[in-house]
Image 1 (tube, rainbow, N blue to C red):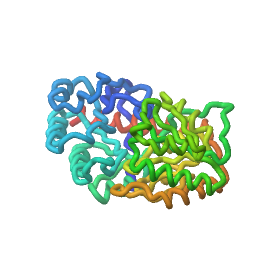
Image 2 (cartoon, one colour):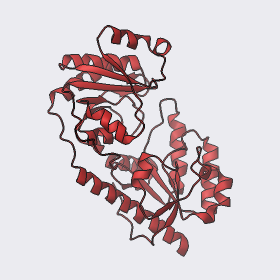
Image 3 (spheres, one colour):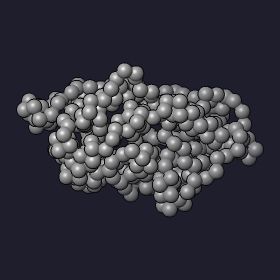
Image 4 (cartoon, one colour):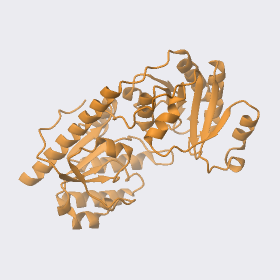
Length: 342
């Protein structure tokens, strides 16, 4: 379920403290007439109860996206008490409904419960996530689409049946299973696998089997670390299929990058990725045991044998992003106005 969009905003230049201060998603949803209140440091000082209370008169709205995931529950409860004491309206966007790979599900629920009990307005990215928030926490959330982060670069085309698996710094769960499943699917689907790892990774100690597979010609090994969303989209434009390795997130910016690149994405089950974009293929992945290589192989074959997705209309994506910003402007204006009249 989703709530109605609030009434018109109070006016321009509302002062908003965002946690985190910035980043591709935060920058994409921030209304143009909003003044972002710093400092731009990590961890955010706005998660410090003393800082918040001392500087409460310097902002109109506090918006939390992330940054609280490792805070002890008692610390979050002390912080939410400070939020209520300060009178600053809290807006929370729930990106992740479950704990990360090394996190405790019970602790993550407790953190979310404290945040959601204090928030004036709750946002999330998909109807399924909104329904879960209503069922588990009794909160109605406004659903806002994940906006585009970068437009594709003209002149870069995909290589038919090229499958990409980006392992970064090898932090994904069970990377050997991911490689085995993606490689099997790529070969069965008549394609080949490219595995990307961060340039600083020492494969000799971190993943020697990967280097051996590359030396044997069974996959292509590439070192890459694109610096921004535009560079990531250029990277993805070369692929027919991209495999998303992370099973922890409820939503993913990677899907939006693939969507803009026109690259089909194979995603782990358990989240709401398929609600972000209909043109995804899901494979089995368990938070405790990691990815199912057989399921991943089948998903890659299915992704390769479907017609390649059409790249999304850039003008439509730009308008969608403006619509998302308008929702944020309306939310900020309403909660700030409520604070003034309270």
